[in-house]
Image (cartoon, rainbow, N blue to C red):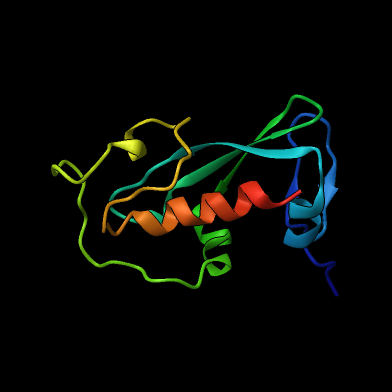
Length: 115
């Protein structure tokens, strides 16, 4: 019988979070960036800093269920409605465009409200 895998282990200090809730409840974790993957938004990467000064990368798909609002089917990237937030990894503000990518910005908002 194998032990259940951890949600994430800090590559810098080795701290292990057994579950996503443990990770999100850790006050030493802060979301600091997002690297878009336009072909598969769920494969995009959220970047988190840990209080040990380590950085962790976790795919959007690990957190997408935190958001239960509308998900648009068309991309607005490059249009007049697009503010270009996804092109800047440290821009974490919600996107006002009716864009397929906007749900990721809402997940970021949720992650930023976590302790």
